[in-house]
Image (cartoon, rainbow, N blue to C red):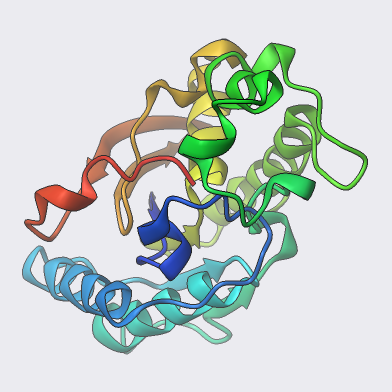
Length: 221
């Protein structure tokens, strides 16, 4: 079974370089276009999904809906579309809505968050990396792992967020926490994961079905 883990399309906060986190920010028109291009790319590659899981945040749900319209297997067993709260973006508390490049000039803690996560201290309204890994690990074990027993499922899409994707990849690879941000995940980037004999492995990372260099450095948040 192949699992495709995909980031949502562009939002206004992505464009402005703001820390987005759990704030529910909608897609821009460009974000919708990137999702359409990605859906067309799946079709060209003959990739149709038997099941889709999405974060509850609107930018993810809307992106997932566009892919569903474009690249859902018409013979997919029902129900085929699920919203799971464990896939929501990491909560950055008081930092959400602030421009990252500006706040990094005066706040060493937010610098640690994106360069040395082991030293990051979330505020009381934020989320720790430990908690992020717990909920993504739960989704891997309780939702994705059992899918291998459903023989009618060949391809599954997980539509989520940049930090959540990095958590998936870090857990599968068992990479150190301070290497967490070494992986770039632009809007609508796609990662192909193989589930076979109860084991997850990374086949391809950061697949993009659009050609827009200005998006390639938007890998954070």
